[in-house]
Length: 252
Image 1: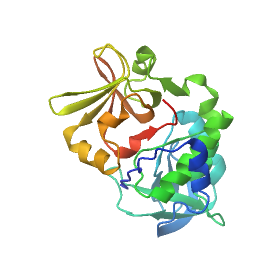
Image 2 (image 1 turned 90 degrees about the vertical axis):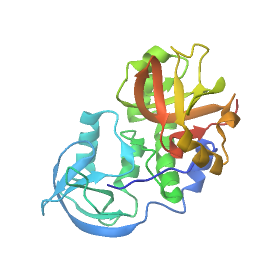
Image 3 (image 1 turned 30 degrees about the horizontal axis):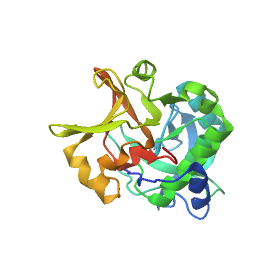
Image 4 (image 1 turned 135 degrees about the vertical axis):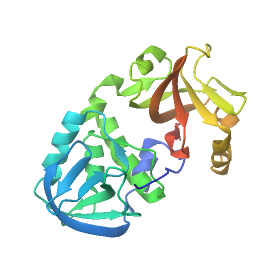
């Protein structure tokens, strides 16, 4: 399966949009085919039997996501691009998908419609910027998922975040404090460390953050957007596994 890591970007949504115009998710060709069926909101099967999984995105509403994917690619000739065509443990090939005649990945269109969220697993900066710009466009226009005010979770509402345990979520808020306990660093968004939302960072992640110019302590009193899978460890937690899960927002 493809493994990507977003570069940490301390930029506004408008800067993301302008930076992404000249580049995109252009990788090595992995093949082509015609779409025979839609498996789910991120997967489909080609006429030759190969099952493809869309790289670089997560889907919030599976039913609507599957319908949107079907409208874009069902019965269409497509090409596949990516850095690695090795199937995952379920036999699916992860790829960026291009409808014949288009140089924009299907992932971007799903993001632009508000039917998907950018996954933190994107390594190529140009591709990451393209996807983030498409997501930002939908978010600003309140399309699809973003039409719901609760699509972005408020870090000051731990109960709301905890209701999505086990799900992929996007959370925004101000880091009130940065504390270390053993091998784990906590970005705390509330005063009650056992109840409020926090981002956890293992010791092995610190060098990557520092290499990106963002030592954890520098995030104190900054507004950030974090994306990842919600866990319950007393209060709700998102573990930082990749630098690209964090975006530093403008202002404090």
